[in-house]
Image (cartoon, rainbow, N blue to C red; front, side):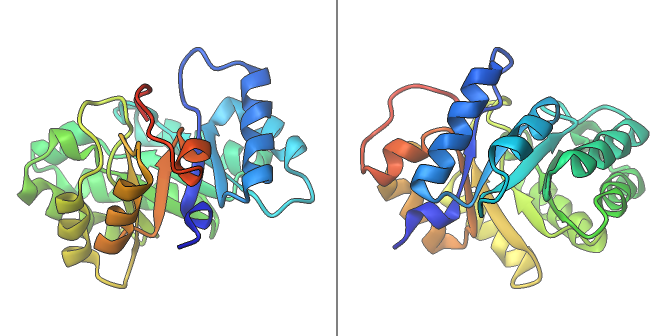
Length: 221
């Protein structure tokens, strides 16, 4: 398995510096990772660092809580795309989902999809905070909103990716959407299990260690 092609090489820590983002981009190039995943303020820097490479840029939106209003998510998405992002990882409004305000949740996603102007949108469900029924509903709403991926976690809300969650998500979206596993992917063996269960992409800050088949003992993402 070419694990590198699944990896969104990620640094979303609040204390991340420009130099660390540059290092992230260099590692992504050296290891042929699919993409880097960064906060929106670093998209333009990544675009400069990754110019003329095949590494894509994913920007998180409404991160990590997801409770900003839709207009703010739309603005952040449009700016990220303008600055060079080709993928958007947006956080779902968990509270709206839990109170069964499904129209709000679907519209929130759909407006980000529209603002992304044809670029891929991944919807972060924050699975550790949801029941199985809520996970299924979040997948259904993401599908109706025409997003491209459903994604497990921010890595900041507790819990992490599980094989069971990937299988559950796959049971809802089938081949109509892709799935991104993120949160707590610390060994190449676990990464392979997630891919076998149906994950099409892996979000991790441990990509360099994973492809070297080393176990990671620290870090949240």
